[in-house]
Length: 114
Image 1 (cartoon, rainbow, N blue to C red):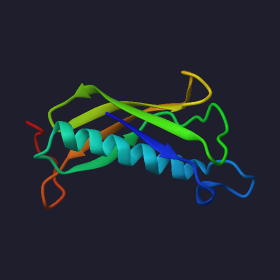
Image 2: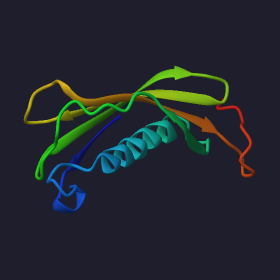
Image 3: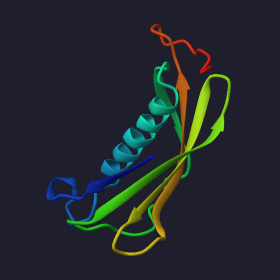
């Protein structure tokens, strides 16, 4: 799955750069959408996000491309590789991680994704 985000003034920290927490929220949302499209019958919750390391700063007006690709499927979980790319700066990722979701029932207990 692929989506784009436009960095707006409300997304910036006090120094004029993209607030890291905002980017993490976008990544969580995009990868959750990917998982929900792959497994429409599941209720997913985020259980892990691997390495959080920002490779480049991002300014106002930047268009970011967020790609999410299923990397691993377990009995109750699915993991997605996520890359964030600054469309104008080239193909090098400014951020990458893996996000793992677990399928839960209405009471919050794990359940099979198949």
